[in-house]
Image (cartoon, rainbow over all chains, first blue to last red; front, side, top):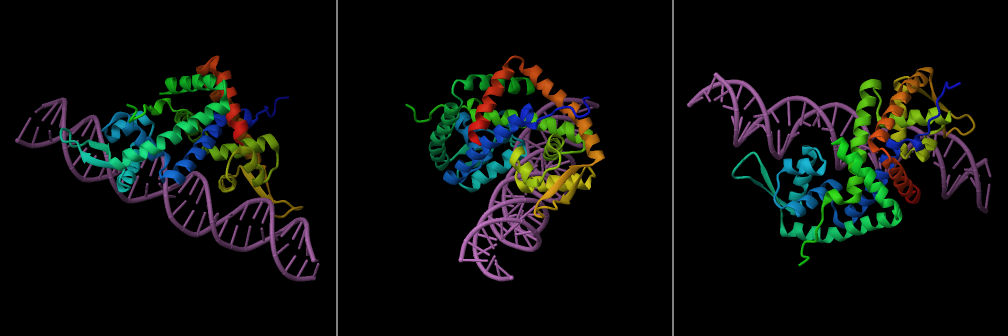
Length: 145
Length: 145
DNA sequence: CTTGCATTGTTGCACCTGCAATGAAATAAT
DNA sequence: ATTATTTCATTGCAGGTGCAACAATGCAAG
């Protein structure tokens, strides 16, 4: 009987997770690009610099879930735009020191409220379901790393 | 005091959602590529053809959350690999009729158990949290479309 | 009929991405 | 000290992606 086992892509958890993330990311990226002219990788670098001060590429790679080449290119774009500086770490000259410029700090100050508002929108849309979603994401992110 | 409002990227919902989805997708894509030589877009097309029989590119675009160009290219690769055929719909010659070949059906029969096993792994890792995650994804997918 | 408009699928283009190779610097081994 | 090994960041390359432009077809208006 079961020659063709029932399968509906829309009930398939990996697909659903990816579809939801893609839509959210797309909407988010559009807003960032239009209002601030930055991409999501650039935003992640900025956010981490805001959060942790001077860091290296490797630092960001470890904490922000991005390949080092992606970090490197995002950092180069941010440097070209004047939002960060790249300097050589004097104690270990293999390392870079990425640092926000005043313009970068000002940009972060403008982006942060938009990011928080976006997250608030998501939470509103989710209502009480947000807790379950967070718990599920925790489980996936903890175990899988 | 609040010159620099606290912000931790790892508590930021859009980031967490995307990070989780990326890791899952990556693991999934690796397995598909190694075992079957197909990508996720190709898998989605195959899955929809398995589920719905003959369909057009536009059909898949609407139901599988992919741009038409992405569908078109995935379909071309699948055709080149001999897994589907592309024919012109005789009643509306703008439309294509995508159809699984016997090889395509055989491939789907091999992929489906792997997909189900992967989903089962996710469910195991999540345990009872899977319900909350599903509910949250529902909310995001329903409202956002 | 024909003329204009909408729809379907493909493709050119510019961009982004991951991976591997590379160069530079630090560390370990002998 | 010299040599090998490891670490860090960048870059070349091949391939995937979205978007806009396009050709082909269908449909509607006159």
